[in-house]
Image (tube, rainbow, N blue to C red):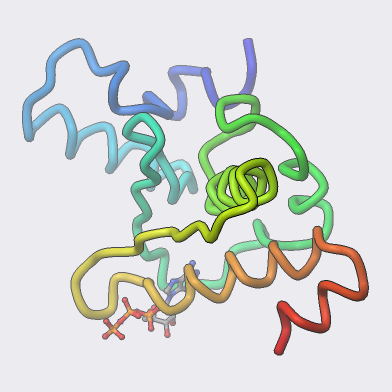
Amino acid sequence: MAEHESLEFGKADFVLLDNVSLEDFMANLKLRFEKGRIYSYIGEVVVSVNPYRSMNIYGRDTVEQYRGRELYERPPHLFAIADAAYKAMKRRNKDTCIVISGESGAGKTEASKYIMQYIAAITNPNQRAEVER
Ligand SMILES: Nc1ncnc2c1ncn2[C@@H]1O[C@H](COP(=O)(O)OP(=O)(O)OP(=O)(O)O)[C@@H](O)[C@H]1O
């Protein structure tokens, strides 16, 4: 069983909840957060909880785990969404967007920075200069 499927960390995707109620949603979110899992999915949407502490989950090694993978192959992460958007953009040759929503202080700006960092890391050096610009 993959690490992110282990029940020890709660359900990685809220669509797998047996009973969809606010109580069960919050209990799963809390369990995951307490185990250091700040990201979860609702299908193709990432739910993020602001950890307010530095997490060692955005490094080069993590980038490599997500590069070119499908969404459900790895534990929920912003990098999985970034990769899916990048792949969709290349496949369709059309602009793509990622919608980030949440209340003030939820971590939207940080999330957008990690997404851009990921895109910069996986594009080739010529494109990277343009992404960084
Ligand atoms: N992934 C993260 N890891 C660690 N700390 C984080 C993370 N995301 C947010 N934070 C912390 O929370 C603070 C607020 O996050 P951020 O500025 O991204 O919120 P925001 O949703 O853009 O807020 P606003 O809507 O008010 O601009 C950051 O300065 C940082 O300290």
